[in-house]
Length: 158
Image (tube, rainbow, N blue to C red; front, side, top):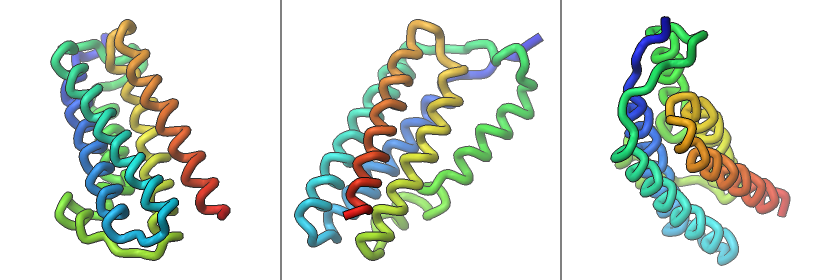
């Protein structure tokens, strides 16, 4: 039988991902001199804020949910912990380290692309933990993260 897992724990982690993304993008806004990049990073920082607010509202509504029937609780929790620990913005250190990020424009874009890809994967897995009626919010965030990845990839090509 599937165990009970607190979806709220996953939603707190999602809020942390978005907070780190906002800090990271705001740092890039501060350090970037290229106007188009500055505009893109500013937009992405705002998107992270919007997503964090979505997850904060979900956190208020969602309680305990069952793990998927195929999942062993300890194994799945370890898997989700690995997804967070290996996430680009968690590997870069804590929020204070993110505020100190320095890199070339290409490094900044590549790091941002890694962040967006890692976030998509985490959110895809998150969908398993929210009630059916709430999945649309996670899906919308995934779609937006995908569009961010496309924006960053097009900027990298330029």
